[in-house]
Image 1 (cartoon, rainbow, N blue to C red):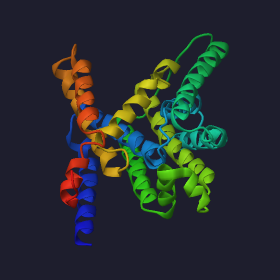
Image 2 (image 1 turned 90 degrees about the vertical axis):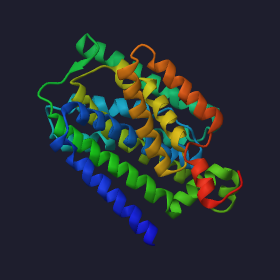
Image 3 (image 1 turned 30 degrees about the vertical axis):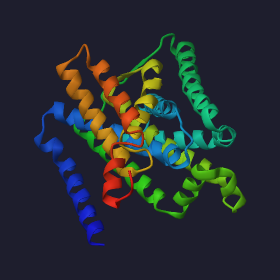
Length: 305
């Protein structure tokens, strides 16, 4: 209990310090932390489905882009906060609508299917943009300031992290992990695996929808090629695997490390940083396939190497 209380106190302190960033930091630092919180929200929401059930999804870019375009189309018609929340709810409803047929597919076929979902939504919006406006892309005027966007992403990132934690430590989370261990056995024990996966898919889609809505206003210009880019999904997966994709703290660490390392390498080696970053990722996957936290946990628990 004492250790848990100390952990909660430390996390509360970190959250309080994050709330103070816009008051004392430059716009560059605030932007960096905004990006960091964005990736935390995306990675923590990703593990709710993929980390806990083993259904590796490449669909986060579809939900991110859908939330962004919902905000772009409704920005001048509804309040900002309602637009952000509605972007998440639209993605939640979309995930629920496609969840049952999609989640009947397992293994690499599910990966390919979710990648196809991202590409389908991208070209769907490209065609809609051309038919409705004759061009691709939207400019958003009179968007909120950096501080407002920062606090919005802070709320979403905190919400995604708390949700991932409570899902993991709930009866619902136990059911999700049983799907990962052996789905057919979980079914035979009376767990409705279809409903469990469906709910996890919807929750996992809710947060990237809100993040996409916020980031659309930050960029002030969006187009389907950028907001539906598969790079969003791939980077989320790398972050999750970097820290350990079954743990809330692992996903958090992976998002923090990769964001900061990417920023540092880009600043110092703008022409080579992708090569260096790729080498780092290959090293982690080769020698720490369960994440950088796994060796530390083994030592703490005194497990055999």
